[in-house]
Every structure is written in structure tokens, then in C-alpha cells.
Image (cartoon, rainbow, N blue to C red; front, side, top):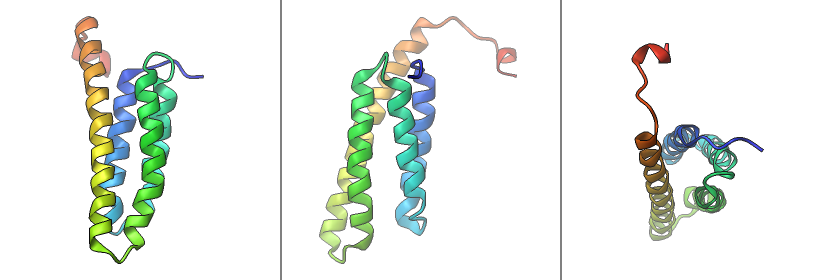
Length: 117
């Protein structure tokens, strides 16, 4: 099992959100990237952030169902409902991650820009 890293969690959640946003715009294969990144969120957070891990798992499961359904349905109302659910799910996950990221930022020492090179 991986050691929890909130910065890694944020990176994968951000990447997954980008993949997800491109999926309905002609890049259906990007759904796989979103699903994979959400799985990384779960793996990176399970030890120290189990609530986030569970939220990511639930988001992954919902997105795996909802996005393909939204892409094939001919009912515009159903498509809107499904994609609204996806947006709401990702928003809740993002807020939880950002809250933990802010806590981590307060607890860490200052890092000089040279340490990132």
C-alpha cells in the first residue's frame, strides 16, 4: 500500500478532472485516464485520508457508469442529469482534497524555489 501524499492526491485529482472535462468533447477515450487517475487518488490517500479515498472510489464508480451512459443516450435531459451528477461528485471530491491540502500547507516548512529544481 502506498504512503499517503496529499500533493500526489491533488495532482491525480486535477489530472482526472481534465481528462473528464475532455471526454464529452469528442475524446471519449479520455474517460479511461480519468478513471485511472481517480484510482490513483484512492491509492495515494487510503492511509492518512480514508474519507478522500472512499470519495474517490465512489466518484470513480459513478463516473464509470454515468459518463458512457451520457455519451450514448439520446435523451438530452438524461445527459444533463448524468453530467450534472458527475460535476457534483468531482466538486465534492475537489473540496475535500483542497481542505486537506490547505492543512498540509500550514504544517509544512517554507521551501525555497531551488529545492524544486
